Image (cartoon, rainbow, N blue to C red; front, side, top):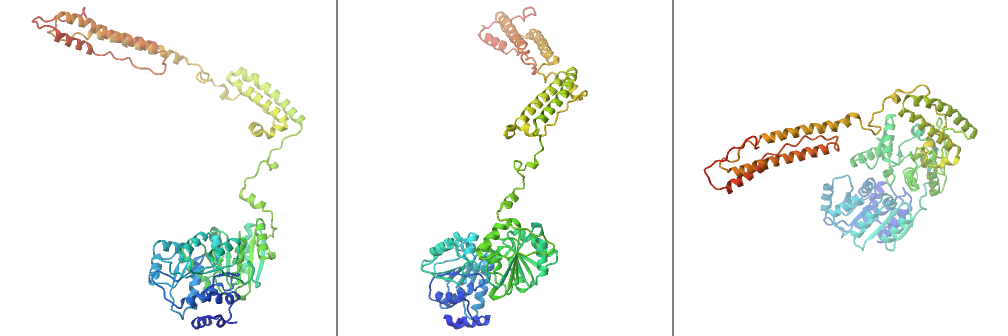
Length: 615
């Protein structure tokens, strides 16, 4: 069977023959006629079997009849990664060179303005990643009402990357009357559920069982310590006849570290992961395809769909967390019937991951060894991996970390008896030196008695609140000060710490009260001398005489009240010392004199000035 028997046009057959293909693969032979009949397709085939050409060739034949309008594409192909989208676009250029069809590559990391210009001219095919396609549609640069053909490629990878909600959103934008092609390397339950939701009476095409490996790939497994993995990788690269190879890591950070290590040891290596700029990713992949780079250190972003001719080796520097990813990683080699080798470097904690891979591919990966590197055994329980995350040792389980303590009760009694004479000798000496210092040995003696009593009871060890017992697990005898007493115990204790008032503080209130009384007496004399001025010369004698005694009483009353108040309040307030209040000026006498002057009758007689005796 050849491509001419599949019903393709002459222009497409000529482009296929120019590419060097004569016989279609099994999935191409079953999918191409059904696509030309406008049926929905649910295709499942292992990687490297030609799934891309199975939908590219019939799409070119269908779109050959018609013309796209501005911002209204006629078909859409969704890819999980930018590299895979770029590769599909290259296949359109290869197979459609004799057909005048326009395409648009809508992916992230490229200029959105340039992509908008291509859409304005009109594109028959849009090859896009889900995120950038939704962003372009929401900006009003794209209309999907005329789209009649949808292709979802690498659906299982879409599921792993979290693109399923975006795909559901894109499907709602499309018209209900359309043709949908659904391709995946594996067919888990989630993918089957989505296929039933998106497809209408599809034709299921399963070329090989899910997650099967190519028979031309030789698999090897090495188990070692984590610190030996870089040296083992370098030895494998030197010993094997490596033409070009993929080196896969689980994390982007590990990709950068391993890339620097390989370049430091003189290997021709490049790197590629999702955090790099799209220009750098495209340039690195182009150099790897052309042979300028021998080793490509990458994450799982390069594990799907990247077609590099004649890749000799694949090195899994880390065991993949998902068993399906192992199928796609090793599928980069042994393509199109060629031979290939896949080496996996594992640590003992990866036992469960290796077991899942063996179950998925229905075979046990054979073990191998490297000279000079110790080979370890896999741990299929997974306990070491959990303990590795928390490096803190459990003090309850680790009995060796606890200090040794005697279980014999007689030994504890001897310890208690030896500690008592030392405490008895130290106590009289400290009582003779100073009373405050004698409290410390007595307190220590009580603590030691308590610790000895607690040590006799084995059940007290489980008491979490008894912190003193946990700290004194050694039960060593307490040695007292003996004849020597530290100098800090002989210093005189201040009266403030004992709750007593010092003598200076007790005498302070008396001095403050005496000092407050003297200004009060002075204020009386000054108040008696001040009212020499007459309020008015024209006032009568009676009002003036009445005003003088009132003024004297007004000045003396506040002064006496203030002096009595300060003398009574002084002992209560010891710390705060207030200055005596100054006597008020004679505002009240002036006001009374003014009222008397206004009410007094006019007379030519002037009131005599008050003498000192009257004041």
